[in-house]
Image 1 (cartoon, rainbow, N blue to C red):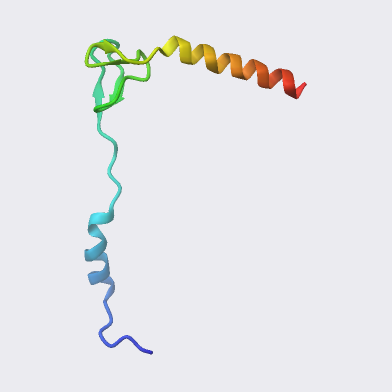
Image 2: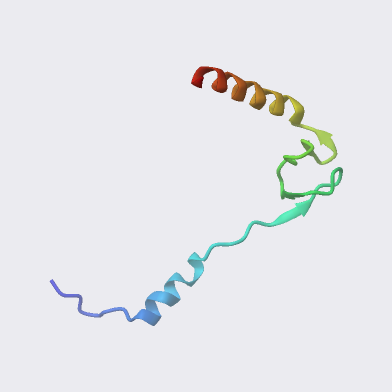
Length: 75
């Protein structure tokens, strides 16, 4: 079966003009002054709107412990 009214490249591209990717918006953390995504806790200091939400040091310790265990099993 043949398409009767074929869409031209320009009409197709005009329809797809809203499908573009948008760069993420960054804001500056109030406590550590590093860039972070809006409406999320800072991955560097773990604070959101002035309050400590994430214990960053505990996450780092957990990651190091996991790496050590993985290194022991691979030897």
